[in-house]
Amino acid sequence: MPLPDEYWMQQAIQLGETVRGKTGDNPHVGCVLVEKNQLLVKGWTHPPGQHHAEAHAIHQAQELGLDFSKLTLYCTLEPCSFVGRTPACAETISEVGIRHVVVGIKDPHPRVNGAGISIMRNAGVEVKEGLCVDEIRESLGDWLRRFEE
Image (cartoon, rainbow, N blue to C red; front, side, top):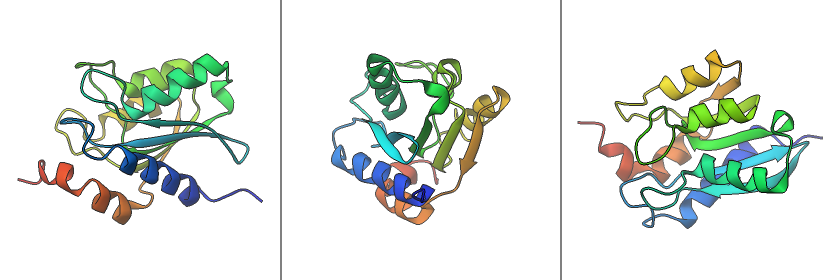
């Protein structure tokens, strides 16, 4: 029997917590890549200018030679949609061929705020959003409050 999406999102939340306070001004996001009920890759946010959680997981999956079309990506925060110090994660996800993404919460950053989800959906990626919302809001609370003013 397949494990529920909530189970995999909890794994991503726990990964994000392992880098709390180590990501500079970036949120401490966790990401897992799953195929057929098996966790294959873990990703987490690195300090500014380095991999975001999704890019970290994708890079590892590329090194392992995984078939992205068979994977589901779970990430605690909506993938970014703009190029800054790093490429846009939503674009990278779409380009490598991931077909299924589960997002915990939307990114309230004014340059994202739903745009990452739109990029992926427009590229044909099936996106499910709004999973483990309370836990993620608690985990990312300090970072999220920056956008509530």
